[in-house]
Length: 461
Ligand SMILES: NC(=O)c1ccc[n+]([C@@H]2O[C@H](COP(=O)([O-])OP(=O)(O)OC[C@H]3O[C@@H](n4cnc5c(N)ncnc54)[C@H](O)[C@@H]3O)[C@@H](O)[C@H]2O)c1
Image (tube, rainbow, N blue to C red; front, side):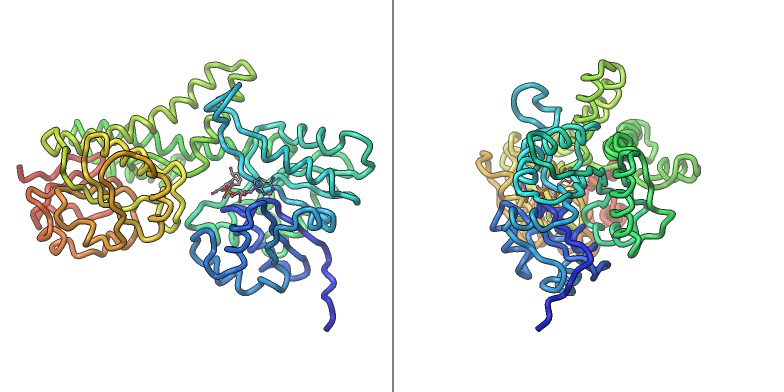
């Protein structure tokens, strides 16, 4: 048996929602590179080495099966992989700090720092270190200071290469990205490192989609990109509130304004609020940075995007409470969808967490259903007081319920037999379509009292 000689060895530290999929796409497209994803969590690595992947992402398993064991590997042997690698991607988590200075806003950089120290300890030859994690602007400076401290003669070139994929469409986003952003120093060694990383992406990404900038612009662009996306959601959600009291219809307003090419049609759907592990965390990080650099007005502007998101989730719960005669005590509510968006099992910072907690505070009994997020939903609500059941089958979840709260727009909820559901529910039966993804007129005709978001209700009462 001959051992394949690879052109370069890549290691990615952090086998999460970003590390696993991004490295799979690189391995799929670059058979001449050896790609190893490492993590401190043995459980995660074992899952990546099985067909029960630790995350649900459409199309991912097939791509992993194509390359795993050939040029794609998952391992816990972090030290050896660092030593052997030419290029090291850092994709560890960067959560919001929950303690001390900057608590609730600043990024907790402990995992980045631990990773940097481990790289420094094990590197015996020059390395390119690529920031994949989302980090504060100028974090590369901290990374460089740690890596180059002491007497080690190894040279590290740091690049910023933030990830823009969205969960649920991660595979498509990475196979045909809008752009790949690479930030580097302008020094000769910085340019060589940048070109080395570009060579990888050029295996499948057209040259014109590779955007190169200085390090700080690249780091900041990732935060700004998420802030702008979240800002659009908060903006349209404020208009949804106004529509509900004026009999305007937020879907019609979105369509009308989205046809203006300066505004664009995407990301203009009103909903119960944005979620996911990134938006809130990255905006709060931006707010913290603005405060740190003494720009309080700029900080206040971006903080409002998060405040409005909280307001929207509260509003959704209040609407349910008011419609259902101002009491939910002992009433059964079916919650359709818990993931923060469809086609993922990820529930981190999902609006469903806040909404379910509030509904339980009102002493409603909840039957939560979701095709891929029930295990995570259980973890998110662990220890919370109240009556909660987790039910695979949406028909069972709705049986005997007084109302349905649709929080995640999984396709399957649009295809259900709502007559059958209505027949099995308590009357009057309510449905709160937090995503405006159902046929409201048809539901009304069946007998439901229908509460869309950002539109007047269709009410029999
Ligand atoms: N999830 C997304 O959609 C998304 C998109 C773009 C960018 N990002 C950013 O990418 C980064 C990673 O996000 P994620 O969602 O993949 O996080 P994640 O929590 O799913 O994965 C991070 C992994 O890093 C591992 N880890 C932590 N410290 C380690 C260490 N010292 N050595 C080895 N492994 C270590 C953890 O065990 C975990 O498996 C974050 O900065 C995030 O903001 C995430």
